[in-house]
Image (cartoon, rainbow, N blue to C red; front, side, top):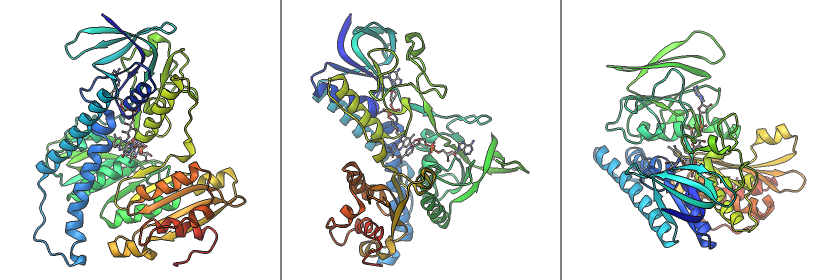
Length: 472
Ligand code: FAD
Ligand code: NAD
């Protein structure tokens, strides 16, 4: 039997399922193929959602231990019931994946369970073979294929991930006990978020990073401030170090490291090691080579500005095409791609995609960093405002960090914003809207911000860009 579709999306992550929904909204007959047995991809199953559930639980535990007393709230000994914490996280994931399945049904997208492979390419009639959970293969015909197969953990040579003692982010989300110690390899987003979860729950966390800085793509001032804050929280950093091996044994994992620039090495040991050195595109088994789809030398599917690969009718979106590996970037590409398939114009402003690190305080950045502006020789004004000078932050007892706005020196157009602080990820969204509309820092400064709000920090940073902050 062969069903025929206008669009078949391979991969049911934030890129894939959103693309299928938008295509169906626009009147295309759409199907979404997913092999993991649940929709939502990496993000919902083993990424954004479970990590944020554990970040929230561990944050509450940390607050109960360290913040309640200052508010005059006395609690007895605060204890962790890890099984309940994990069960709650699993429930959140289950509800979310079930919600996505409902959304596909509601929008009349056919959800095909199984592993998809491009079996044959032909103009307006590509064939996709799906190996279902029963092992049988079914063929489908489609005018367009959208590849949204996502990404997978980047392995580290010399380190074997067993998901017990040496874990990836997936294993770090399901540990059955709080380890006494953890070595995190990589001071990127996953390393700092999952490192924060376990540090808050009582693990001694040491982060080993190849470069001399944490969170490499972020603004320099933000990186430095965040490192100080995390160190104050008890996280240890070994920067400029490369890991040469990790050997699990009865008494934990022995990790050998040596300075990235050469010199004498040392051996560290910890109960658990988390490998978080990045993610790589996942394309295995999807029949791309046979179909002739062009893959870059870094393994990404090559796609043009319309998400079209070199093969007519085969498109690609999300982590598998590279760029910022973020769920919201994948989702927006899903929407744009579906609109293009439906014959509509569509585009994404890649200069206005926020990156957020959900530590506490949070870190958020959008647009250009100071380093990028300097490198590009663009003259800019800086406006900075600390949370210590914000009334709401003081009322909340959450005053670490600052907001910084970078505006073009000639036109005052907002070029970037970088925030370390409470709810930085929410606060940055007003700047995203401002940048999307080509706003100036004066526009943000003249927008009436409700009081007392953390967002007044962003307004004051915008005022500071013109050297007229009011509350400092
Ligand atoms: P994916 O979500 O990877 O989905 C691809 C799907 O395709 C998978 O479910 C896979 O099973 C399926 N698939 C692959 N090949 C086939 C095939 N041949 N047939 C059928 N199905 C197939 N991003 C954020 O923006 N915010 C966050 O807070 C955040 N937190 C994260 C935390 C962790 C621990 C991790 C690992 C990632 C996090 N990310 C976060 C990144 C985010 O998860 C990804 O950017 C996002 O999931 C990419 O979406 P995608 O649709 O491109 O791919
Ligand atoms: P990352 O790219 O954020 O960080 C990896 C870090 O590992 C970098 O600092 C890098 O310099 C370092 N590194 C690389 N090789 C190393 C080595 N051999 N030894 C020591 N350090 C090494 O990658 P990640 O943290 O694994 O996250 C993967 C992707 O998932 C990212 O692209 C990120 O965007 C996405 N993600 C996003 C969020 C979020 O949006 N909040 C959360 C988690 C993950």
